[in-house]
Amino acid sequence: MPLVSGKEILQAAKKGGYAVGAFNVNNMEIIQAIVEAAEEERSPVLLQASQGAIKYAGLDYIVALVRVAAGKVSVPVALNLDHGTSFDQAMKCLRGGFTAVMLDGSHYPFDENVALVKKVVAVAHAVGVSVEGELGRIGGTEDDISVDAKDAYMTLPEEAKKFADLTEVDALAVAIGTAHGVYHGEPKLDFERLSAIRKIVDCALVLHGASGVPDEAIKRAVKIGVQKINIDTEIRQAFTNGIKKVMAEKPNEFDPRKLLGPSKEAMKEVVKSKMRLFGSSQKA
Ligand code: 13P
Image (cartoon, rainbow, N blue to C red; front, side):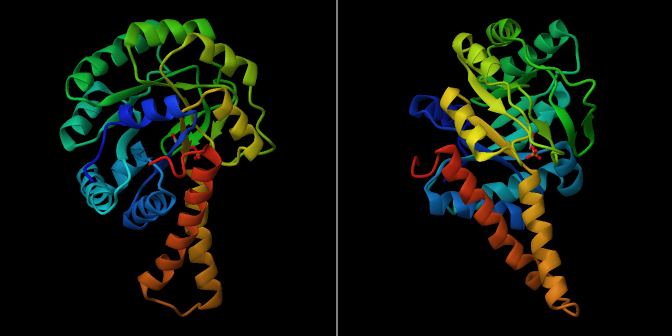
C-alpha cells in the first residue's frame, strides 16, 4: 500500500503498548529484506535513511525503492529521515515523499534546537508528515555523525517535557545510555530516567542505537513506553557476514546476486526477530 505517516504508526504503537522498529536502509536488498519481513510478521514498520544513505544511494533512489517495496505489501510502511541536519534537507525529504522526518538539533543549545524543530513541524504537519526531535546527546558513530562519549549526555525529563510542548513533535529521541554502532561492553540503560520522561511527556519516545542492546533491556524499555526503536548496525552485520560466508565457501563466485541473495535472508531473520521482540508482530 502507499506509504503512511509515521504518526499513524507511532500513535497505534502507543495505544497498543508496543514499539515499532525503524530500520536503516541503503540499497534494494536491505529494503526488500525489511519490507518482506514486515509482511511475513504482519508488522507495521519504519524504514529510514541516514545522512550516509542519502549520500550513498541518493534521496530519489531511496524514495523510489521504498515506494515500490511498500506497494507490494499490505502492512503499514513509513519512510523516515534519520538524523536530519537542516531545515532545507527536511523540506527536500517532504517534497521527495518521506512520510516522517527527524531533525536532530541535539548539538545546538536548547532554544536553537526548539526553534529549528518548530520550523520543521509547522511545515511537516501541514502536509501530514510526522517529526522527531532529539534531546540529550546519544553517543557513538552513525555514518558521518560521531558523538564522543565525553560529549554524550542524558536527557533531562523536565527539559524533555518543555521541548515536546514547545515544538509539538510527534516523537522524541531520548538519551538514556544507548549509543550508535558496536558496543564495547554491555550498555547500561537508565530506566528510571526513561520512566520519569514517560510520565510527563505525551509524544512517542524513540530509542536510538538499539543494536546490541540485550533483549531484556529492550523489553523493559518497551514496557515503560518506548514506541520507536532504531536498528542499523545489526542489519549491516547480517549483510556483510552473509557475503563473507559465501566468499569463504565459494571464493571464485562472481555473480553479485549469489553474493547478496543469502545476505537478504540473513537480514530478514534479524528484522523478524526484532519485530517479535518489540511486540509489533501481528499488529498490522
Ligand atoms: P545502531 O546502528 O546502533 O543500530 O543505531 C541505529 C540508529 O539509532 C539510527 O539512528
